[in-house]
Image (cartoon, rainbow, N blue to C red; front, side, top):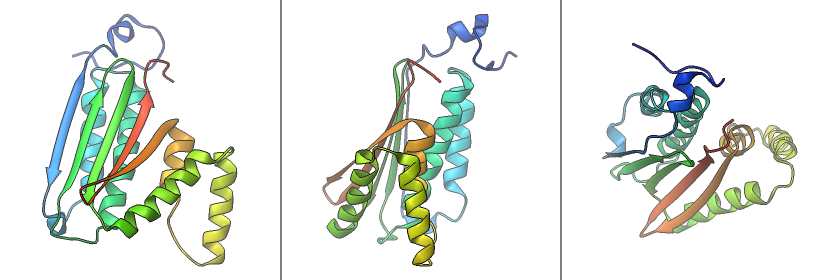
Amino acid sequence: MVGPSPIGGSELESQLAKANISISYAFSPIQFILCDLSGLIGNFCQELLGAFYPRIVSKRANILISELVTNVLQNTVEPTSQMMLDLDVNQDRLIIRVKNAVTSDQFDKVRVQVDRINQAEDLKRLMRDTIRERRRLKEKGGLGLIRLVAENKSQLSVSYEGGYLVVTSQLDVGGTP
């Protein structure tokens, strides 16, 4: 059995990144998710995509999924609600979309954070400033989305659809890495 090779121009590599793959998951109620769901889904998708795409694409998919799903699980306000995850990848782009029920106030908080990230001229500086501010306030966390964009070269967007927060991460695959 031949596994994926690292980026480098091998014969196998020339055949990678030509498949279209779509995966959808729905979990409900969220309150009964008692395992490392973000790790399970992230690792599974990394293995699956690794059979069709360069390792860097499958690894980034794992990171994106893990962060987005973890955010949902750690910030759920309605434990009886549903979380949905969609992954769509082709030779040009990887899109990961996570949906969960939130209040309009929660959506506004996430939207402000994503807008701040998307408008930042220097993401590393934004990360440093955020770390300093969170230390000063003795708060933990809050860096995941910044790291997601800064370290994985992904684009992030949010929308509010029928009471659901929809966070979408898009990664251009065509010019990998």
